[in-house]
Length: 234
Image 1 (cartoon, rainbow, N blue to C red):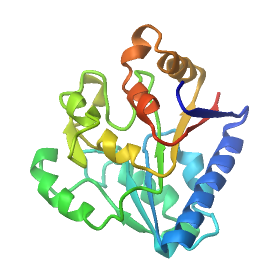
Image 2 (tube, one colour):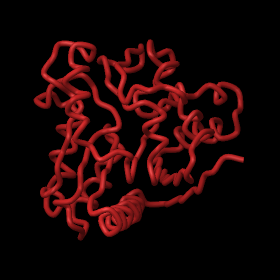
Image 3 (cartoon, rainbow, N blue to C red):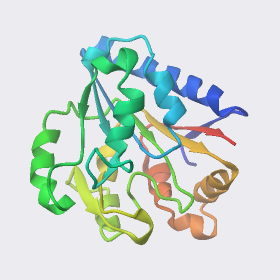
């Protein structure tokens, strides 16, 4: 049996509020126990309301490090940049005091920037206290895209790399992504999904039906060592 707890909402604003409170509670707990907290979030359009709600959460944001689960290899000036999204919506209000560690580096390709990125990631107090994943209609999560050139390496449970480049037909730009072992080390895992189409994709992945057996998100669901809290709204 997969270790999944599903929280369904009829209103996506209500989902955003509930998820923000759950994440904030986990961050407060981490700060109380370890003096600091580490949060990894996903980009795209789905988490916008969640970011806005979380940015107002009452906690000691000066003790929180924020980074991304994955990133498109574009500069922050691009409207495709997840870092730009996080800075404009999450790292505002109370959360402006957090420390942000971006994944994109000033290099032409992810491979060229890998050494600098790994040096920057040394500042992260791993493991993550909270990881908030998203999911696409192709069953990808993080930058674990079907057909990705480094997909097998990124999903290898025995892999030793923290981050890997990824290229795939469905990815658009080249990407950089945290690998599965690093994400599975998180103390709390959330999966934020919106829309009926994605609900069906997730159901197929959970049940291992048809193409769902090979959806990359299933690797997270199968191997998670802590409960995966799914937050869904239409």
